[in-house]
Image 1: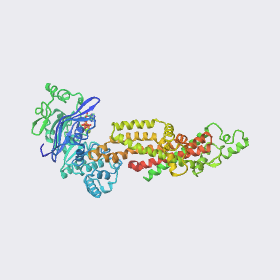
Image 2: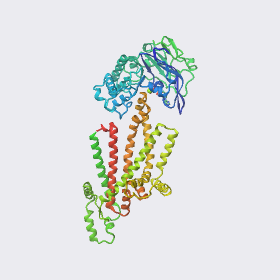
Image 3: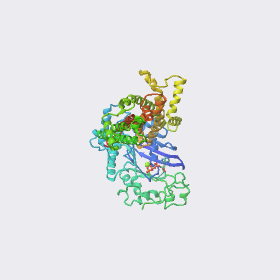
Image 4: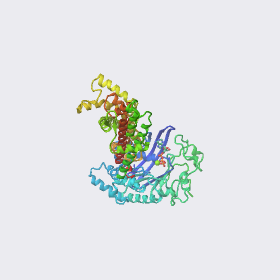
Amino acid sequence: MDANNVLEIRGLNVEFASERGRLRALRDVDLTIPRGSIVGVVGESGCGKSTMINSIIGLLAHNATVSSGSISFQGEDLLQKSERELRDIRGQHISMIFQDPMTTLNPVLSIGTQMIDIQYRDQIPKAQKKARSIEMLSRVGIPDPESRLDNYPHQFSGGMRQRIAIAMALQAEPELLIADEPTTALDATLEVQIIHRLKDLQHSMGCSILFISHHLGVIAELCDFVIVMYGGEVVERGTVRDIFHRPSHPYTFKLLECDPARIAETTRSLPTIPGEIPNLAKLPPGCIFADRCERSIGLCREKIPPSTEFAEHHWARCHLAGEVSST
Amino acid sequence: MWLYFLKRILLGILIVVVAVSLLYSMIHMVPGDPVKTILGPRASPELQAQIREKMGLNDPLPVQIVKFIGRVATGDLGEDVFKRKSVNTIVFEQLPHTIYLVLAGIGWAMLVGIPLGCLSAIYRNSMIDRFAGILSVSCIAIPTFVVALYSVLLFAVTLKWLPAIGAGDGGFGSYISHLILPAFAVGLGWVGYLARLVRASMLEVMSENHVRTARAFGLPEKTIVFKYVLRLAILPTITLIGMGIGILLSSAVFTEIVFARPGIGRLIYDAVTSRNYPVVMGSVLVTTILFVVSTTIADLINALVDPRVRTEG
Ligand SMILES: Nc1ncnc2c1ncn2[C@@H]1O[C@H](COP(=O)(O)OP(=O)(O)OP(=O)(O)O)[C@@H](O)[C@H]1O
Ligand SMILES: [Mg+2]
C-alpha cells in the first residue's frame, strides 16, 4: 500500500444472506483515499454506499459476510482485525457522521454527557474533557456552547444537531472522517453552511474525508476525488475534474446529462434514469448496467467489464472506456 | 418540569373522582336493597325509611355522589354498619399487609425479570435467550393461585421450610418468613412480563440509529447496553411496574385467601360476600386511589429519566 494513502480498499466483495437468496451487495470494489483529501461517493439508493462504509468500520449487519478483499487503513488490513482492535480504531482514528441528525444522538442523555463519554479512552480529568467539547462545539458554530452542553438533542434544531455530530466526530482528531449523506436531511442553505464548515475544519485539522452524497453539486464543490457506484460496483473513479468534465462510463454520463446545469444548480437528489435498478440476487452474466445502457454492444451482455485505468488516475468499468466521450 | 408534575397530579385527582363516581353508581345499580341487607328482611318500614333517610339514599344519584366525594375528600370513608366501626380503621388495618405483599412480589420480580430480559436481549437467539423465553412464558401462563397452592404444598407442607398461613405472630422475623411464599406467588407471573417487555424494548432501542452512532464511536459494549440502551428501554418497564403494583393491590385476593393472610383483597372479598357496602366502597376506593398514585409515580419517574417528556410542559 502507498504510504500517502489513508485508506485503500481492494477487491472488496460483500454478500447478504436474505430470503431472496445471496445478495451480492458489493462486487470487486476498489477505493483509494489519499492523505488529506476528500473523496466523494455518488450513486443511486441501494447501490451499496452504506454497505461499503459499514465494512470499513466493521459494523456490517449480522447477515453480511465479506467474502474477499482487503481494507488497508494506515497500512493495516481492517478485515483481519478483532472486534476489540476495531473498537479502538472507531471514534479515535476513523469517525462517522450519519445521515439523519434527528435520530443519531441518544435522546435521554445530554449533549455534554455524550461528548464526554466518547473521550473515555483519554486519561484526563473530566473538566478537561468538558473544555475540549466546549471548544469543539464553538468551532462548529454552536453559540454559547458552555451552557448548551447540558441540553438534550431534542432542544436543538436539525442543523444544530448535525453540527454537534460533526463536533463529536472531529473531537478525537481522527485520520479519517466518514460522512454518510450528512446533509441529505437538511434544507439547502443549511447544507451549504455545513459543507463549508466541514471543509474549513478539514483544512485546519488535516484529516481525510470519505463523503457520501446524492447531491452532485455538493460533491463537485467539496471533493477532490469521486467514485461513482452502480448496483454494488464502482463503475468509475477519478479526480473531480475528470468525473465531471470527462465522464467515461455511460452511467456517469447519464447522471450528468440528466442534470443539465451540471454542478452549479441545487439538485436535491440524483436524477432518475430510465430502467430498473439491478436485482443483486440474480445478476446478469455481463455488465451490470447493460440493460439501461444506450451504447451497449454484444460483448456487454456476455462479459463483465474489468476496472481499467484508461487514463492516468481515471478508472472505469466499461468495455468502451475511453471511447465514450462527453462531447 | 414542575408544570408537568402538576398537570400529572391534577389528572390523577380527576381520574380518582371519575372512578369514584362510576363505582358509586355501579354499586347502587346492583339489585337488592342495601337497607334491607343491613336491617334484615323483617325490619319495620318506618325503620327502613329512617335508615334510608340517614344514609342519604333518597337524594338523586348525582347529589349522592357529590356528597360522597365531599365526605371522602375530608378523609371519611363512612361506617361499617355491621361492626359499627369506622371504615377508615378497618381499611387501614388491612392495607399495610397488602402493600408489603405487593411490593415484595413486584420487587423480586424486578430483581429477576429485568436482568433476565437484558440477558435475552444481549444474547438474542442464543440458548440463554430461548431458555429465558420459555421460562418467562411459563411464569406468565401459570395462574397465581396454582403457584400459591403448589408452593404451600412444597415448601410448607412437604419440606416444612416456611410457614403456610397467616401473617406471623407480630415479630419482624416471623412477618418476613410469612411473607416469602405469598410474595413468590404474587411475583412469579411478573417475572415473565418484565423479562419479555425488557427484552422487546431493549431490542427495539438497540436497532435505533443512535446506538449505531455509539458503536461507531467505539464505546464499550457495557456502556452502550447499560447507559445508552437500558435508560431508554426501561421507560415502558417503569410504566408497567406502576400498573402492576396498582393491579396487584386489588388482585392479590387469591393469594391472600390461599395463605389466609389479612389484606385489602381479602377484605373486599369478605365485604362483597356479606354485602357490606360501606366496606366494599371504602376499600375499593382506597385501592383505586393507590392505583392512580402508583401509575402517576411511574409517570413522574419516567419524566425524570426522559428529558423529552419533562420539557413537553
Ligand atoms: N442487512 C441487509 N440484509 C439484506 N440486504 C441488505 C442489508 N443491508 C443492505 N442490503 C441491500 O444491499 C444493497 C445496498 O444497500 P446500502 O444500504 O448499502 O445502499 P445505499 O447505497 O447506502 O443506499 P441509500 O442511498 O438508500 O442509503 C441494497 O440492495 C439493500 O437492499
Ligand atoms: Mg445508505
